[in-house]
Image 1: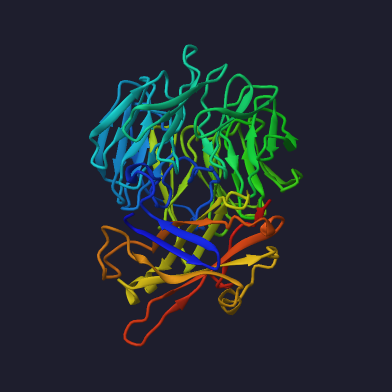
Image 2: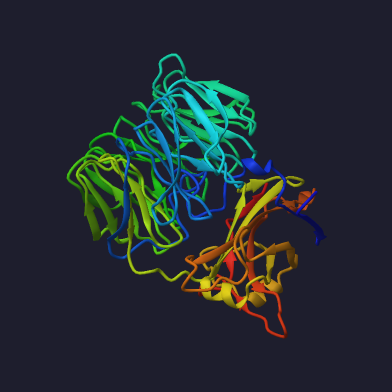
Length: 532
């Protein structure tokens, strides 16, 4: 297979499969490729947002903008408006192109790895547009009010919402044909999320949250006391978070059982953001922003001047960005203290997006798209590593998602250098102590690989190898991939827990090596995987 590396080391078969799924149906590796950043709707960004608020630019459309912005790897910004038009902007704020549909666009787009953009319109269609704005295909449902998600399996997941005749959740093939649909008992405006086991999680106006398998079968459902506007969020521990019109905010286990709930004074219709510690951030129609601990206990709250439809975005420094129907965009420190706000003439329903340049992108019901900036943030070198699912049997497969981000200075010094990614499986890890050394990874009993990642370079496709800094605007470069580890079919492994530890370094060049790690700890540790 093209772009695939197979290595059998100490009993694990590792596969780096960059071409395992249809290339046009993988989610783009970009600063903010879809609603709430990723298929789990975490709202987490690897980039810092602005410390202070200055308007970088704005663009006036013909009607309200409650769509959230999707940000592509080439700097393009995509957003829809209720003026029936879908917009593509250049990084400077100039219009690149637009596409006119037959009705309002209130959903957020998703971008695939080849630049294809997926969106829905109230004209009953889900659209796939090329990176240049031409129509690739459309699929007719009724009242597409659900933001699409691009799954690892190559499908596009969406739903029809406000039309009584169409209560379906749809899985569309990359070609635009129907793969399957599932009929809820009420309308669906919730945007599908994908959990750590590949299930599609979505809420309905029939008061139920549904978990569907990749084949469209019902895995489980959970009933609340009110309709579900809220789109679900999946935490790194597999918990499912969502709000309901019964005033409750819920945390469920991966199997759909209640873990905890929190009662607000009014409906919760926006999507939760969850940070790396498991703390959850929501807004409610009782005018409050809430931060809830992993246990469901209140960490802090902040009262705004009106109800809240916008969802939080979380920066790499844990600062928080959102909007309120009191006509303000807000930024908070992680402790809940006020950082800054920006007043507009009308309500803020759009959920903010964070760019690699440290800017905040958001729409407003005053018809404008706003872009805020502050001092340029410092982006360190770091590696991200996550594993899924959290529990496997002998003979089953673990997926290992990795990405490396490089500061601009490293890009300049090591342009075109390939990257060594070193990964080891560590048995019975103490995940609370994340300060493993590189020597500990190198000395691990189960050593998976230490090999150049089959030609993966530190520059993205389309970027030049030696940009001139000061003239070229970008702050970091990301390389990423997915590795697949086949667990040996050995019953002696049952009951054991593993995590995966990784660091990376640049290849040597003329006797020079530039070893870099993941911030201060140098080594990144994935979630624990239990073999049962």
